[in-house]
Amino acid sequence: MKHRKGPIAPGYVRRISPTACSVMPFTGSTVDDMSQLRLLAQQYAKQVPFGLDWPVNFWADKIGWETEDQAARVWLNHYFQSHNPQSNTRH
Image 1: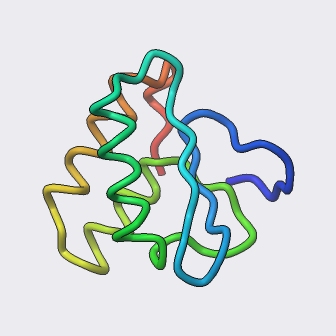
Image 2 (image 1 turned 60 degrees about the vertical axis):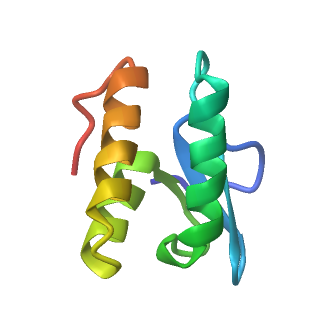
């Protein structure tokens, strides 16, 4: 987790308002990946804490626990692990 105000690193999500967050896709993401990330950002912005850049896999777990949307959790975890060169980064 990173406290930042500049650009968001690939694979991280940042809450930018009470009802919105921004997700930076990994390099090489498909249009479908980016559209799915955009949809999840609209639906689950409230699961991202203010003041931190969260890795997508942390966000996925929070979505799974708080909203019980296991499909979103599984998709985000798969996206993170398939695009992150250091995919062993888990909490």
